[in-house]
Length: 256
Length: 305
Image 1: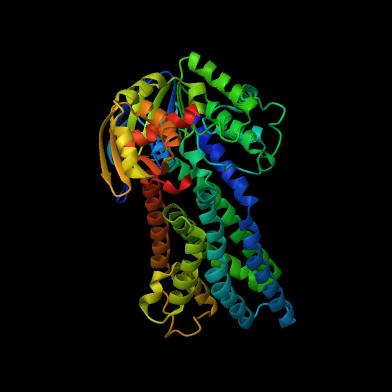
Image 2: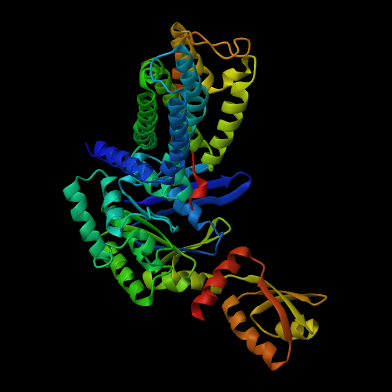
């Protein structure tokens, strides 16, 4: 009972501190930028009925900008800050000397972070879809599972970064720009190192019955959605497990 | 219950932090003394379970210090100035109490009690970001005490606290020691430890070089021969004067440097100043060559001046 109380205290403490942190300011910029672009797309086309062209434009915007760039930024901002913030501020020492197993400390951090990031991603995606009329409503039901799976995988992965690296936010930013943006957009199978490849595969497959295709099939060959979903689940579970193992054993010599 | 170190060695890569330390620390206040880099903080981190020894074992009671079970018995006040700055002192201590699993009511009660104990009742509503260094030290002490542990590890707890505050903190530590708690206080200032505790562990270069009461350590050093290097001008004149002194066992002269072996270092250091003044000898350097003795003497001399 005492352990459960300690764990819930740490979870709610982390949630509150993340919510009112600089990370929230950081993610508001790309989310606001997306909102402006969605509004521009909507008012630019003049009519609000469903048409394939509008669906394709909105889908490509969501896949190439929102899913490939904004979602990792949101996950990165909170995923690395949840533990990395304590590590950089050196307040982690106050947690490590409490009678909470280290794995549970990290799980509390993760449990606080995941709903925050999911809430932001799903909430902003819902808003963009809502503002885009019929096209948006269709896109919401088609793409939501892929976005949830991507968010989950990114949050797990960035917790591993926070556990492993001292300046995890910077390392994660470099990772996001290099691996996710650069390698993720190269032709061939090298893009499989990027998490967003699997998310995009699911999204393109989900949009296929409506006529959606990748801009250049030679350049982007989507995986089967089931395979991509398993890959995202595997990245998430492996990332989180590895983070738990490393955090349970690691000495943090940089705290004092 | 004891805090015990059994042949504990800790490496940071190729650098040794502490070297084959064995000791047992029981109820009462024990002072951990040493210069910066002597290994005090490494020892504290090993005892608080933040680090694991490369060799040997650190135990809190019967538990390994790294284990979660050991943390129930441990109160740790680190030598750092980081807090959740947006919280008030009271909120911070309350949060730490909650992290020990206390219910809201119990955590609130314990927070109030411990804040009163450290003399922060009227200032605990202030945000940590606006607290002075002394106030932050007291809050650190309060969070270490809030779960009533039997072992307290206090890393430089008196730094930044005014003399009146020190007296209050000392009195609090005396009360806790009288309750049977084991308290290990680290400091690099002998006077602080002298006022708090008669039992000391003295560290230098990762080793415990002396332990016992302060009087025992002083006696030990008085009885221990020491080699001292002196660079002086004229060196030969000083060598001749020292050779006449019965406490000097041998003197070697090389250029301007003398290597002197004395059987009573304390008397030697007491007399040499007078000797060089009387004969107008210029001393450029005076340094014990034994690292352990150097550290002890450094402290003992500082403590007396």
